[in-house]
Image 1 (cartoon, rainbow, N blue to C red):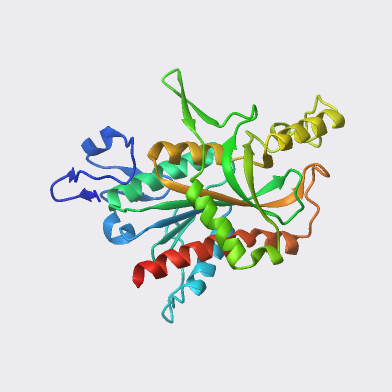
Image 2: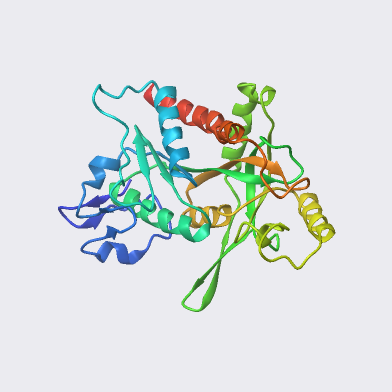
Length: 314
């Protein structure tokens, strides 16, 4: 697999990401401003060359918690006097943790914030010479026709017009990228939930995910500062979405799927529903219950990663 070689300033033939920017090869330096890391400032190969899994979610605390969860699942011990550090602690935009071959990072809210992080992490891993990568987005969402606490594995992300397309505007032109998630990975995650009898504890479903541009109007809420539609119109639209296979709404899946599809990298999106949007617009669950909900995707993704790592070590 290709990687950046600081001694000959060249790349080997194989690369981890397809459609990679051809200009990267000619850059004397490449500084990842939002991560406080860089091609010349850090030994990226030594720091990240073993990464095989990238787990991303909205909040720093959730990713830190998942990092500790995977440390325990894999049986890794942190030597006395040391701790699991935030690699990007100098900057306050994103947080990043590493446990063995797993990288954890929070992407903030919405596609713009996620696209910045994804750009810089993909470049980082490109220079580090990583291979056989799998990306996961782990998040919360509003369910449509499912009860709170349901874990939803995305089949494909769709926009507000239910198009399975990520639209990016480049030099005044529209670029359209596919948003279908990896079918085999979806099957593997569903199989794990069956084998672990997870569905005895909570529901696990798969379906289409609507990615909105905002939390309020874009998600058909009636409790935002603006709303020029009726409650009945809102419900009609949500029911229409559900009939078309949409089972949840959030704000990052379209960009996540579009960028990683374009790079031809394996990825999955697993979210937990905090409410059923056919019943309510506001999240009324207690903070304790929400925190418990947020950890439910950990079990499925964590077991998938554990099996892959264990099989590789045998």
